[in-house]
Image 1 (tube, rainbow, N blue to C red):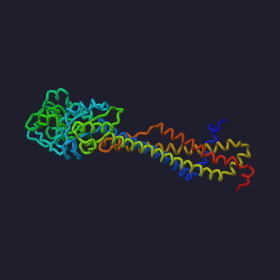
Image 2: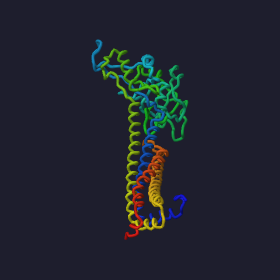
Image 3: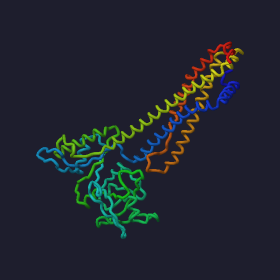
Image 4: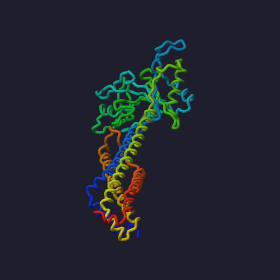
Length: 422
C-alpha cells in the first residue's frame, strides 16, 4: 500500500513534529517568511504598476511635447539668439515628411510659458485661470473626465464658436456646485466676450496634463481672441504604436530647423519632453522590481528549505534507535527514506501555504487602505497565481532534494548499531 495512504505514516509525522514543536515552528518560519516576501512584494510591485497605469490612463504615453526656444548658433546670415516660433502650417508638412507620426495636437496657452492667465467672470464672481486653445484631437492626448456636457468638436473649430469647457474648480467658483447646478448652455465672460459653457471636466488627484483651474476654448477662437494668427505654443506629437518616439523627436527637430533656417547643430532652438522615454523608464523600473522580488523570495525560500534539511538531520540522529527497531522489524530502506522525505515535504508545504496566506492577507489590507487614494500610485495589488504555483512547485521539489540528505543518512543506519545507541 502506498505510504501516502497509510494512517500510521501520518501519525508518525504528527508525533514527530509535535514532540519538537519549537524546533519545527522555528524551521517553518524560514520557508514561510520567504513565501510571504515573495507574494507580498510581487503583489506590491503589481499594485504600483496598476497604480501608474491608472494614473496614465487616457494619456497618449507614446508622445513628445515640443516647443520653440531661441537659437544658440548663428546660421545662414541669422544671428545667435533668434526667437523661434511654431506654426499650424508646419503640421501637415511634418506629418508628410515623417510617416511614423500618428497625429499632432497643437495647443496655445495663457497662464503658462511665461504668459499670465486671464479672468473669467459670471454674476459678480471672477478669478484668473489658465486658458488653452485646443483642437478635438487634444482630448486624445489626455482624455478629460467630463462631469457635464462634451469637449470641443470640429464644428466649434470651423465655426470659430465662443464655447468653453471649464475645469471643475472654475465651475465650483462660478456656479452653485453644492446644488449640482447644470452649467451647460449658460454663459461666462472671458476678455469681455460671452462664452457658452458646453462641458466641465475633472482632473484626478494624481494630476494630469491639465489642472482643474483652467478652461479650454476652440483653437480658432483662441487665435482670434488673442490675435495669435497661426502661432502655436507647443505640439503634442504622438507616434504610431510600433514607432521609436525618440527617432521621431530628432526628425521633427531637424525638419523644423530646416524650415526655420537653423543650424543642424543647434541644440537650443527647440525644446522637448519625451513622455514615451520617461514612461519606458518607469515600466522598466517596475519590471526590475518584480524581478528583484522573485530573486529575493526564491533565495529566502531556498535558505528556509536548507534549514529544514539541517533540522531533519538532527531529528534522524535523535531517532536512530527508533529507526533501528523499525529496520529490525522488517521495514524496507525505501519505507524509511520515504518517511523522512514526506516529513520534509509536509514541513515545506505547510510553511509555504502559511506564508502565502499571510502575503495575500497583507495585500488585501493594502488594497483596502489605498482603494480611494488617487494621489498615491497604488491600485489593486494582485499576484499572478501561475508564478505562485511555480514557486510552490519549486519549493516542494527543493524540499524533496534537500530531504534526501537526512533520508539517505537514515537508510544507512544498520539495525544492530542503532539498537546499541543510547
